[in-house]
Length: 151
Image 1: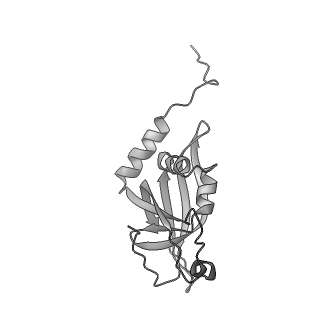
Image 2: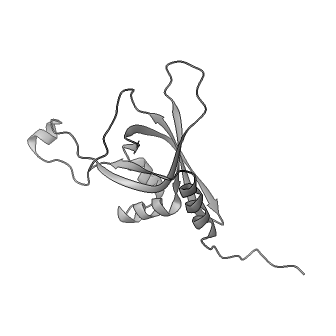
C-alpha cells in the first residue's frame, strides 16, 4: 500500500515542537530594542541632545548560548539566539511589518540577560514551507556596555 504525500497540508506540529524544545532547553526571554515609532521633533531632539527612547519588544521562548570561542585575541565573543517562530510572527503582526526580515533589520540591538548584543545574521528553520524557528547570530556590543532592560 502506498500513500500520496505530495499534497500534504501544513499543520502546526513543527511549531509546537520548537516551542516545547526551546522552553525545555532553558527558555529565556530576549528583547529587541526597536527605534521609536515617531521621531523627536523638539529642538533638542533634532540636535541629538535627547537620548532616543527605544522600545523593548520581548520575544519568548528563546534559547541563548555562546558559540565556540575564537582563537584570536581582541575579537568579540559570538552567540546564538534561537527564537520561536510563533513569537516572531506575533511581533511582526504587532508592529504591522511585512516580514521577519524587516523586524530584524529594524531592530537596533538585542538584550539578553541585561547585556547588549548586535545582530550579525539571521536564518530560519522551516517545515513544509512554514518557519518554526529563527536563528540569530549575535556578537557582543562594545565591551563594558551593560544595559538595564527598559521598563
